[in-house]
Length: 198
Image (cartoon, rainbow, N blue to C red; front, side):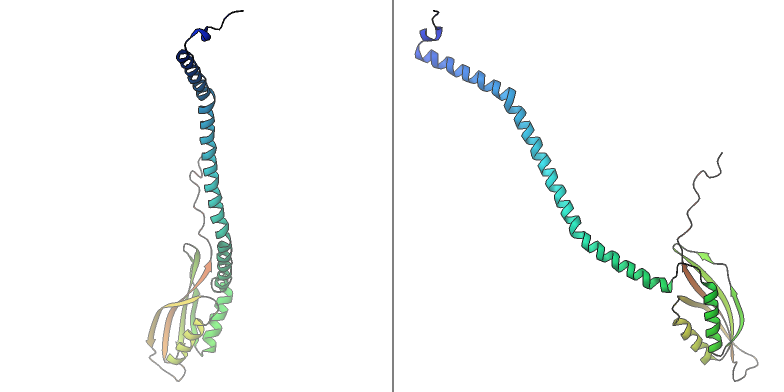
């Protein structure tokens, strides 16, 4: 039977060999297992941190969801109210009849009533109507007040007044005005680039 050479070494030598073996085994363990396990732990810690950040963002979004639902409901209600003043479809015939009726009910004579070409704005169509009226100052003021009470948005502008040369109890002034009516309408889409290219 072969003798173990370590047993021939003094006790200090045996301890030194044991320390060297422990260092070699520890180094191998560190190189082969510990560094890989530490890298995996760091990767998992980063994933956990990212997941926690994402959860926080989702919690914030969930908290805002109720607020956004309320905001959307308020905007929809506002749109309903605004659609009475700024309808989505052109209603010029009804507006013409309403304004004419207001002029007649204010005891004014309509001398001119000419719808002009509508003008496209960013989100609405502006449809001006040239109106000529004769009557009294009082009746003209009553007409303007009645127009301001219409459920539709009608803006009376460019008012030009002049005294009539031959006045009567029912006609002392002549007025030329522009009544602008408005219709909600998105701006037409711009022509696609390259349209017409072959």
